[in-house]
Every structure is written in C-alpha cells, then in structure tokens.
Length: 173
Image 1 (cartoon, rainbow, N blue to C red):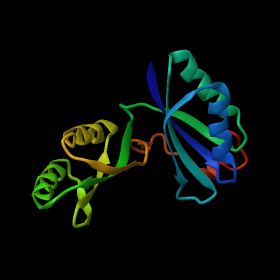
Image 2 (image 1 turned 45 degrees about the horizontal axis):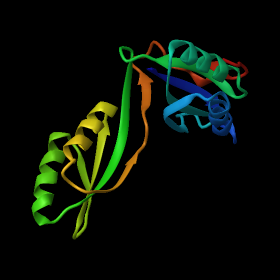
Image 3 (image 1 turned 45 degrees about the vertical axis):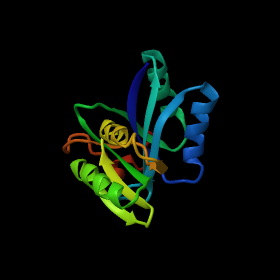
Image 4 (image 1 turned 60 degrees about the vertical axis):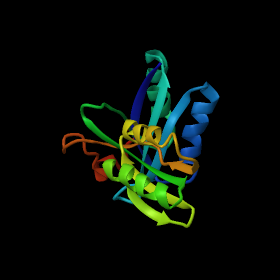
C-alpha cells in the first residue's frame, strides 16, 4: 500500500466536501487524512487528502476527483516539493511528579502546554505525522485521556506552483 497526498482547490460552495468524501465511499477508496479550510481568497477552499492504495487506485482517485463539480485543481503533493504539518492535542492524566516529566518530553518535541489541571496536562504538538507518532510513542507509560489530530495539511514549497485564484475564475481545472 502506497500513500499520496493530494492538494485540491475547490469553489467554496456548500456540499463540495461531501461530494468528495462520497466519491471515496462509493468507490471504496481509503482516506488516511483530510483537512479543509478557506484560502486567502474566500471564494476557494483548499483540501488536503492523504489516501492509500496501490498505484492504480491512487491514479484513479486523482482522475475521479478531478471530474467532480466545483474542483478547480488537484495535484499530488510530493515530499520533496512540499511541506506537510499536522496538529495534535493530547490530554494526559498527570499528577505533580508526572507533569514535570511530561513537560520535559513535550519540550524535546517543541510542544506547548495549553492547559494544566489538577490531574491532567494538555499538550499541543505540531509537525510531521511521524514526529507526532514518535511523541505519542514516548507517552506509552502514561494514560492518554483524550487525543485529537487534525490530519495533514500541506503546501508546495516556493512560488513555482502557487495557484492564483484569479487565473482560475471561469475555468475548471
């Protein structure tokens, strides 16, 4: 099984995310991660999807998504040309002694303590999915009360592949 990240630029209309996820469900494609948010131009939404499958399935995903209404562009975000980040918030059961250890582990991963309770600590960490996985692995001896991960967001490096929304008006892909 391979994984690919796709950057999709869509018209900011109701139901577009539902149509994309519906295509995945109908075809039996697997979504590893999906994030969506409005761009600098509120007429458009940028969606990052990480999908898994063999090469033929991943090629079909790209072709099928490109055919949907409201899709302006779909491109593969390759690791060598892109930057990927994910956010995780982790609430850990922690007494006074555990808090010191957890803060030390968090500092190594450049995490932020965003909430401290009498019996818990909430840590925010951003980075690659593998960085977050490594951080969570170090928490094996602690009780994770809650965990929220945003999914991968990604952009191409530099200015070569910037999508200028005005160039997309009146076009489909």
